Image 1 (cartoon, helix red, strand yellow):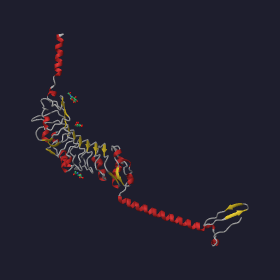
Image 2 (cartoon, helix red, strand yellow):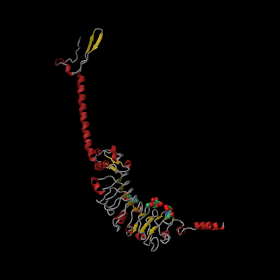
Image 3 (tube, helix red, strand yellow):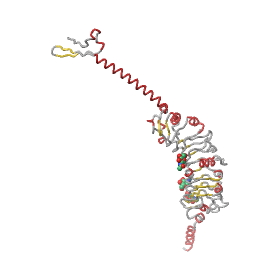
Length: 381
Ligand SMILES: *[C@@H]1O[C@H](CO)[C@@H](O)[C@H](O)[C@H]1NC(C)=O
Ligand SMILES: *[C@@H]1O[C@H](CO)[C@@H](O)[C@H](O)[C@H]1NC(C)=O
Ligand SMILES: *[C@@H]1O[C@H](CO)[C@@H](O)[C@H](O)[C@H]1NC(C)=O
C-alpha cells in the first residue's frame, strides 16, 4: 500500500506546480508556451511587455495585448534591452490608445508575419516601422490613426511612408487593411511596392475616387472600396481597369453615393459586363440619377443607354415641348374640322306610314353644290 501511495502523492504535487509560463505570467494575462494574451488588461504603461522575456517564452508565437492606455511607445525595445522573440509571428496591439510609435520598439521581432495596430490614435510613427518585418503577411490598420487628424495629409503621409517609402521588399505581404481612417485621398502609387498583395481594404474612408498607377496590383484579388464618397468612376479608370487589376476577383464599391448620369455610362456598362466581380451589388446603387427615376436603382440594373446629363435633359425637354406643340396643333385641326362638319351636317327625317324611319344624312359630301343654300331638306319615300 505504502509503495503505491508515494507515486500518487508525487503526481498530485507535480500537477499543482505551475509551469514556467504560468509562473512568470503577468496577473492580467494568460500565458502558455506559445501564446500570451492580455485582453482588456487596462494598464497604462508599456511595462506590461517586460515580463515576456525570451528565456522564459522562447517559443512565443502569438502575442495579444489589447484594451490598454499605452499612449506613447518610444524607441526602447518594448520587451526589454536585447530581447528577441525569434518565433513571434502574430502581434496584436490593437485598442491601446497608442498615439506615437517608434519603429525601434519592435526591433526584437524578426519573424513577424501579422501586425495588428487597429483602433489606436496614432499621430506619429517614427522610423521605418514595416521595414523591420521582412516576412510580413498581413497588416491591420483599421481605425488606427487619430480621428483628431481627420484624415489630413499627416495621415496620408504616414500611410505613404509605411508602404511606399519602406525599405521592406514586401515579398510576403498579402493583406493590407486600412478601414475607417477618414482618408479622403491617397497618392496613386501608395501601394505600388507590394508585389504579392492580394487583398486591399479601404472600406469606410472618404475617398472620392480611387486612383492607381498601372502595374501596381499584379496579383490583387480583392479590393474593398465600400462606404467611401465616390460619386463617379470615369471612363479613363474603366479603360485602365483590365491593365491595372489583371486578376481581380472581388470588387466591393457598395454604399458609395454614385451619381448615375451620362458620365457613368462606361462604368455602368462595365458593372454589367463584370457582374461576377462586383460583390454586395444589392447595396451598390445610384444615390442620384438622371433621369431621376433611376435614383436608388441598383447599378447592375441600370441600362447605360438611359443615362443622361443635365444638358441633355434640356434638349430632351425641348423635344417634349415640340411634340406637345405638334400634338396641340393636330388636336386643334381635328376640332376645327369637327366643328365645321357639325355646323353643316344634315339631319334628315323620313316618315312612312304608321312606322317611322329616320335617315340621317350627314356629311359635306352628301350635299350637292346647288343645295348649299338651304342646307336642310327632307326626303320623302
Ligand atoms: C496556448 O493557449 C492558446 C489559447 O489561449 C491555445 O490555442 C494553444 O493551443 C495553447 N498552446 C499550448 C502549447 O498549450
Ligand atoms: C486583435 O485583437 C482584437 C481584440 O481582441 C480582435 O478583435 C482582432 O481580431 C485581433 N486581430 C487579429 C489579427 O487577430
Ligand atoms: C474633416 O475633414 C473634412 C474634409 O475631409 C471636412 O469637411 C470636415 O469639416 C473636417 N472636420 C473637422 C472637425 O475638422
